[in-house]
Length: 185
Image 1: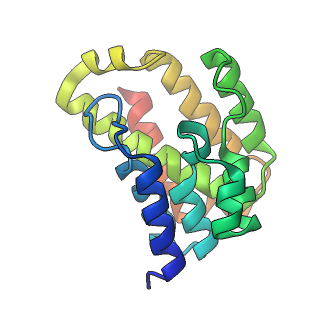
Image 2 (image 1 turned 30 degrees about the vertical axis):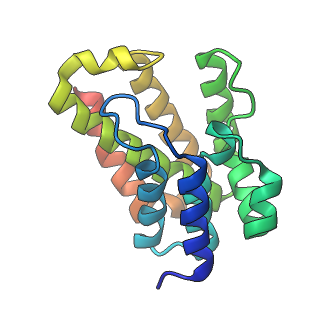
Image 3 (image 1 turned 90 degrees about the vertical axis):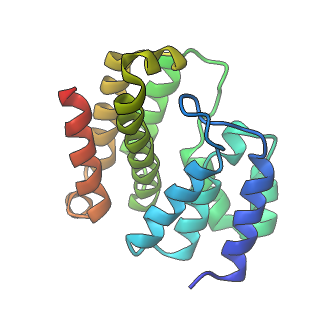
């Protein structure tokens, strides 16, 4: 069931991401956080996790703030979004990704599930775009295929680090399947 709070989050994220496009296929960016939220919902995550998944890129990629998110959706959602938000987008790609990997490695399992759903949707897009655009798609990324493969592999290791039961979660299984496909290309 879609709650009023989730409907408010959909509207909020849609307004915040208005006009943004995905890198390769140029689809409206809002499709990504919406799919992340639906992955979490389809895999039986609670509403706070679903809403945080929907809002996971608001602070990182828009003028939206954690204070706004807390005021509208509560401290728990704000804390979840904060945990998956890159802290300093001005740093170089390697440093930002290494920090994200380190942060997720020791994060609580609910934060790891948001990161997992985010990476699943990104991997779906990468694999789909690779079929459509071939290797030319990598010109749209700050780093090429080899660096992206490194990042998604290390992020998988961080998500599964220290939590045996999370390795059995259906989202983790899906991530591993997509990661294996990506690494074999």
